[in-house]
Length: 235
Image (cartoon, rainbow, N blue to C red; front, side, top):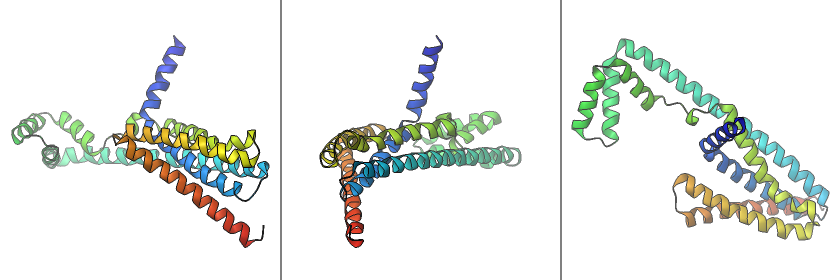
């Protein structure tokens, strides 16, 4: 029973953080793909590629985790501050709050008669007015999840995706690993493109092409920088 409850909570947390998971995986894949290929283009030493890739993957994942935590925490603080300001305004000028809610409902496409009817109901019920105004002006970010949960999902997603381009260099010599890494990373980029399309409600083909293009551009940039530095220092 406890395991079922835990799995259910994990599933809800994962679904609530789906956007962060896709973003984290895309960031990890693209950044480390470019890094690994930049190093692999200038050496046949697997150890060098692994050290660069692993250290880059860990640093990137931790950095993204910290960034996500701070971003969500800041957004929650801003929402709480806005909610407190709204509560204070309700005590001093509830009419102004009602006017804003009515205008916002109108911009959302509600018919004028419907908007007027809702406004009349809210005018007679200050508690409901405050709740509606809070939902419209100071919503809780992150689907109610705490910053720690979203940050952990970002860490796991970023590190998992970052490991994909690196693993082939553990299993094969650098020349063969380049081809394998490029192939599996391409498959992952296609999958991420599909994931982005599903999360964002965008066209699948366009989003996949966009995601793969960004990954390829990162790899080419990494190779160009690696080769340029290698030649500049006569390596």
